[in-house]
Image 1 (spheres, rainbow, N blue to C red):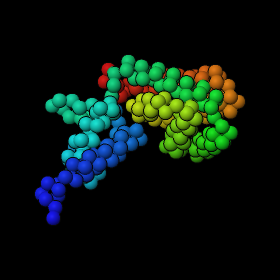
Image 2 (cartoon, rainbow, N blue to C red):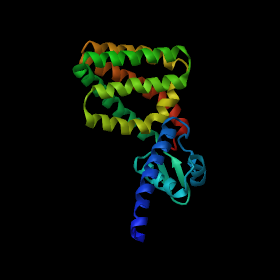
Image 3 (cartoon, rainbow, N blue to C red):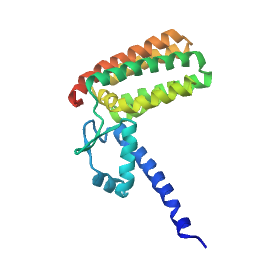
Image 4 (tube, rainbow, N blue to C red):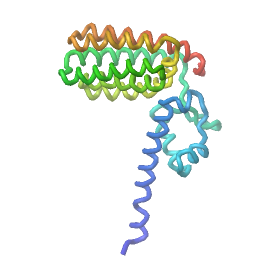
Length: 229
């Protein structure tokens, strides 16, 4: 017969699992732009939205705070991270170098099957661009970039890129909706793809660096409207 202690022991495990799953869902909502930089996140509203109690919501928000996706302000509440403008600039500088390095490694390490996979994703971006659906293009764009991260075949680099990308996603998303940005991205992607396909590591680094620098310049204009600097 199970003791009282035995019956209670699974509860913390269930709460932890639920909080971790909830953290993933809130994180995805932030990355997708459903919650915007500076927006207040109310525990009651989140609990209702996701159909859970406030306890896992509180735990999930603590985890998101550690990941720097939200900011917990004493006596004020929890807000979607809205870092100072200089910090956003620094993150883009780092991301530019991370992604450029990933592209250079991809050019050196990608197999023919890898190249074909990247080609399909590039084509998917083109199809999404033709549809003039910015949301669809943003999703395909993320897949194209992630493929390059993976083709670098460096797990530590991938981990660092993913963590930083989550923090920059709201600003990268805003840029996607700027007039003319999608068409320019397709052209830039083509140059990056060509360099990787041809195994030109230095060229891949330069093309990706240029792509991210232009993206960062566009993002800075929009970040000023959402930054608390």
